[in-house]
Image (cartoon, rainbow, N blue to C red; front, side):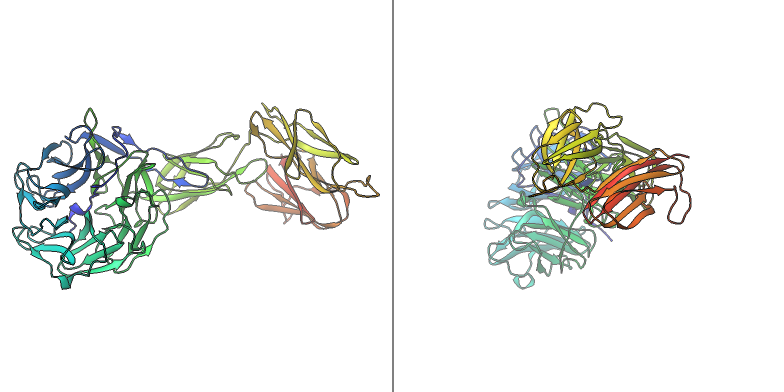
Length: 638
């Protein structure tokens, strides 16, 4: 299949400029993300070279020569995003550039490069608009008299080979002004009206907005339609995309069947989104993407099955990303810096444009590889002491990073290889694991626990002197830097104190839940064990509280047995289960109806099959009465 490289172009003729400079050797930058989001970063460089354009003039389009792929031509825009009616060209694959100006029409729509000396230009303004050609490297440009006039607006030119070509303009005389040529552009014939779907009211095409594969060609409009032809532009059909008739839409194709449609750069400020087709544009479906999709301009990467590059210079969402699965999953190349025109020759060869600075620059050569083999890493991050999932922990492998969700879960797509994993979050020791192996199309599961630096108070107990509740507790074991405590009743903070005793006066009648947290400056620990207190009412205010409470085990550490003390507020069903650090059930110690009162259970260090377990950390969890639950830690040493 022959793919004309011009169609991997991103046009910005009406772009609002958002950035003027692009740092040399720009490596992947990390965006700021909230909890649960994931950003996969591919380590690449954009190596800076001088575009040859004056300061403040940027690159709005890049065209790769149809017959000479070392020849590149680029159209220019000024600092406001308006057409600059200048160009620059390279004869050495983008290493060096020479700029020039047009002795031709005004309002450049696009360029189509043939080789280092021959290039076509489309102009859209005034009576002298139309299709211009240079054969001397841009020194002179000649109007090839395609038929465009003062009422026209020329948008697109494309050549399928040296002889067959196509040009597209907005509707004139009630139908789109489309032309074809079979003699290399020396003469042009307008496509008959009956071969083209009628334009809707107010519909028009967009400058440079088209794509082509083999004999197939597509262009988008300002009213959400994609026009498509399978015979080099002689006959046409049109389909309304799921975006609807109020969206400026463009399309980029990987082959004759598979392509993506997207909101044009003219719809900046509207949420980026894409549709896909698998039948050449006859039908389109919406896609729910994952990852950061920089989605104002797209190009397909030749030589790949379905790799697309997306880029954006929209304020607040500048950057570039790529997808290896046809647009469903996106991996960030860089963020925080505007990427305008891009063109790719293959997965390792590409170019990107920006604005020239006071010391040159403005053009970038891609230094990386988009055709990489990947695998997945996924897991759950939990608190070592309490066993709950940690939300918001930052997990990093290589240059890729993600943030755990509300359950402590994370996942990332990475290039195959061996990585060092690090995880950090305020209040916990930094976790590091070496030699994490990522294998092709496999998921590597890495679950781990983190040590909380902000340890909670221990062994909260109470005494009742109705209507007061007296709370006592122990300081966090081994903690450093704690500054005080917060006392909570029914999830409402009562007071912040430094003592390990608190009297809650005149407690209202009813059932109440108490717990304590430790303060470390402005940081607060997770809470202590909870206690449930029932305060008497009416004629019996001195009714003793009935409390459900899971006490500590003793001894701890232990070998080979330990006693677990607990109490329940009312007769009811109680379970006490023992888990290992992976969260796997080891032993059900209690699972029965228990009378109100204080009880103990003995664990012999065995599992449910009676087999002795290994040394290590274990957790025991009590549930009582359908309301009370608490978990504590113990250590078995052999």
